Image 1 (cartoon, rainbow, N blue to C red):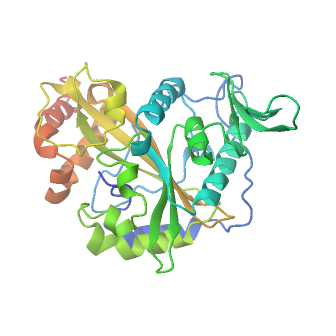
Image 2: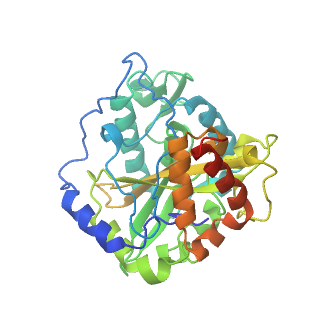
Amino acid sequence: MPLLELIFGVEVILWLRFFFSIVWKDKSPVEPPVNHQGDQKNSTEKREASPTSNTNYNLTMGLHKPKHDRWLIIDDDYLLEHDIKQRLLQDKKISVIGHTKGAEAACEELLEVVVDYLTRNYPESFRRCLRPALGLGLCVDDVDCVEIFSTGEVFQLTAPFTYKTALETAAHLTMEDLNILSKGDNGQHVLVASATCFPVGWSVSDRLGWPLHKLHASVPLWQEKLRIPVERFLSKVASKTNLERTTRFVQVADNQTDLADILCQLAPLEHDEQPADVTQIIVRSERQTFRKLPKTGAVLFTVKTSLKALAELSPQELKSFRDEVSSWPEDVASYKGRHCWGECALRYCDSVIAGTP
């Protein structure tokens, strides 16, 4: 599935009116800390239920302001996904992370923005500190670092970075995949940097330097309906823009499949395997956010991936899922593989909603 898969719905004009009415003026990159709900001794969040996406594909984008004005999320799955990310960044590095020449400044700004947000909004999980420079002994000035309390890891925030680049250091800190889009001289936004450990159907090494229209070549309706409006939207994003949307699709996997292989799907989904039963149907939700990096002017696009078995969804979530899936046009349904898992999934949804699981 291409980067930014189905970012926007068909009725983009309705959404653009909504967006321009609430986008914030770009005055400063500094934000007040988020007032997280719940236990102040543990600032991580409980894993959310499967987000509600568009229930009618043709009428709404599902764009909204996030709960509690949050941006980056640290939840109960942090340690598990942190471990998976570390393995992927080591074993499949060329496929999941990289940047084009000249994108270094934007990557360093990304790291600064990420660290600033995490340390202020999750103070029980992250802190900024001074430590001796890596590999230079103790007889040098201390350098700026960030520490993850739950793992004991300390990452240097100035060159030489702990993981060679600012982008890789940021990738070790967040649960989100991180993508940087830069506007070229021709007015088109190009993917200049990406730390995408949890892709579906693409690899970073293959798509670095691609413009948006090429990234979306296989997405139904994108070229004819959304290419120009999306470029305009990205040109208007500000550092204080605080909007999110959720897109979702379905994967089929048995209980023996490694979680890392489900999250990191470098090959395209074949959509040729029908589930043996509902326990093999996984709903994959992608929470997407957009904001400008104020110094370099690049656009930071984040994706937080969540997996949940269809059988674990509540009746309300199942109804939302059923309505959305049923509303997909045929080309979208084919693109997302409904012909393989749809009958099993929708039959289960109907039975639960009717009170006869």
